[in-house]
Length: 129
Image 1: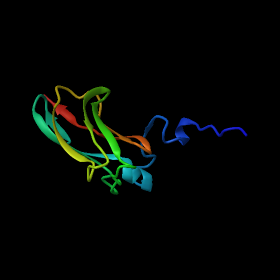
Image 2: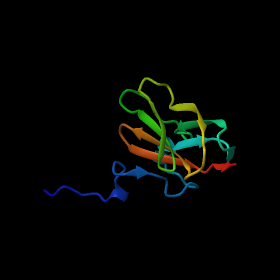
Image 3: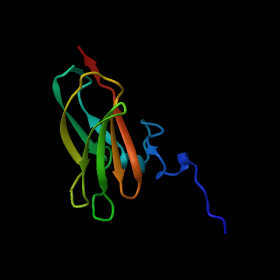
Image 4: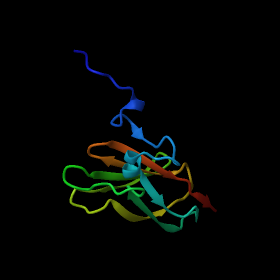
């Protein structure tokens, strides 16, 4: 019997998952989408706090069999940092301090669920001189 093949847009384990419609999220998207809380505008070179919450729309179950493994932060495609998590953590939410010298794309948070793959949330931040 032939095995079914999936196109990338039909397989959550292929590529980076983003919501098709932010105004109408599915339950899977609500649980896995990283939500970024940061200022809309910052001054170049000044530090600011940014919070990331995976499952900010609906709680993600964090247990040994189903959990967020890590979250990576990017500005555009520039890697800024990574937080490793485990199934014993009660809730995948954290705050980090950033300092941007320029904006070269939106801030991206990429979260890796051990069962449902890689998910990305974004936020545009204006960097002023």
